[in-house]
View 1 (tube, rainbow, N blue to C red):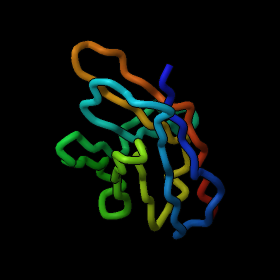
View 2 (cartoon, rainbow, N blue to C red; view 1 turned 90 degrees about the horizontal axis):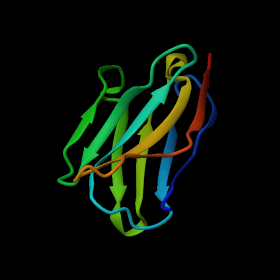
View 3 (tube, one colour; view 1 turned 45 degrees about the horizontal axis):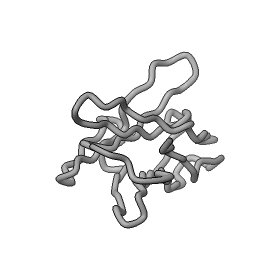
Length: 117
């Protein structure tokens, strides 16, 4: 079974940067788009950024100008570069593979990002 594995989270001071990675353990059939989501304690999971097969990107309003989603198909990896981090960016970050043909989505296990003041 193909898995998504996130990495790159950690503790960073406000104003700092992190690059999150989401690597697929194998080939995922039928991917339509890849997304990064986050969930803070007591809050619902929300979309942070997404990228389609055509490289169209979409960003949540609060991260526009601070986040960049990209992918390396050869490495089966999607990245999320986050700059100018704020304490409110603190959350568990998950990546998700959205797929066609009614195939189930695939979630990673998440990586914790903590931004200190």
